[in-house]
Figure: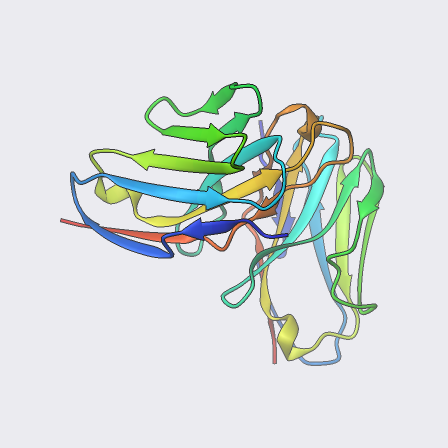
Length: 112
Length: 115
């Protein structure tokens, strides 16, 4: 089942902060965050694993609440380059033969 | 290292024609995923392979779609016959030991238009 993202869209002025949320109805092992610019492929930002491990870009921060099956991506002091659509992808277990299911996306627009 | 390589980048074809999309995963990666992206449905997983074996094809829309992975460095997604509703961007992605907490890396996508 597809994870749910909120908000669907947000407009910020440069320098403002934003939080993007991702929620699943299933128990999760991993949450992956991607950013996609128009006409391009999704680009990996960060992965959060059950147990607290995180891998990703230093300037990106996120949280993962395992009990609630929720994750949030924090964008601080936004820059024009942050514009794009953000997707969360969820993985349900750390056993073999796993797959990544993506949410519907959050469109972020940064204006000068 | 080269990323995931897809071809063709763009294809326009007439309804009823066969379409073949190709993917070369990142060398050494053992999982390969085919996604389809449309405005209405977002990013949908069509099928994924682990060590060249198809694991889950529940996302394949119908029998017109088929995917193969004859070896670790090549996969194809075929649509026969194509229909206008198949118009979308098709992404191939690969991963190394995805179940161990690694992420997946996308190719540039194949933009398909069926007229």
